[in-house]
Amino acid sequence: MTAPVVTGKVVRECAAAGIKHVWMHRGGGRGWLNGEAIEFCRSQGIRVIPGECPMMFLPGAGWMHRFHRFVKRIAAS
Image 1 (cartoon, rainbow, N blue to C red):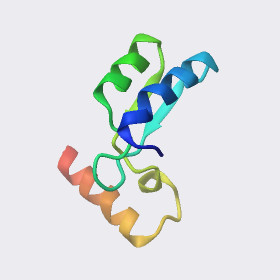
Image 2: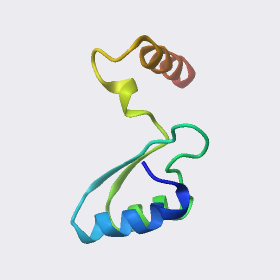
Image 3: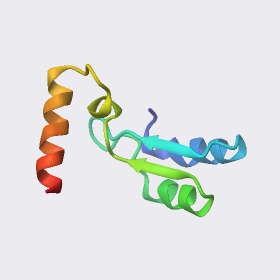
Image 4: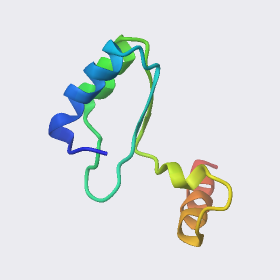
């Protein structure tokens, strides 16, 4: 997790290292989200998950994370 201003540098390092999946956790405020970094990843064949909290998808996550997952499922329906 980094500030959006350094996300571009981080994803370029990921591309150089051969990383093929990047999860940009939004967190509080804007978190990692950076539109230019997302586009760079896509142009390099790196799959991006923009803005979702990883804890929402882990089994045994706390109640708040389960609640967020529930709300996301309802909103997607």
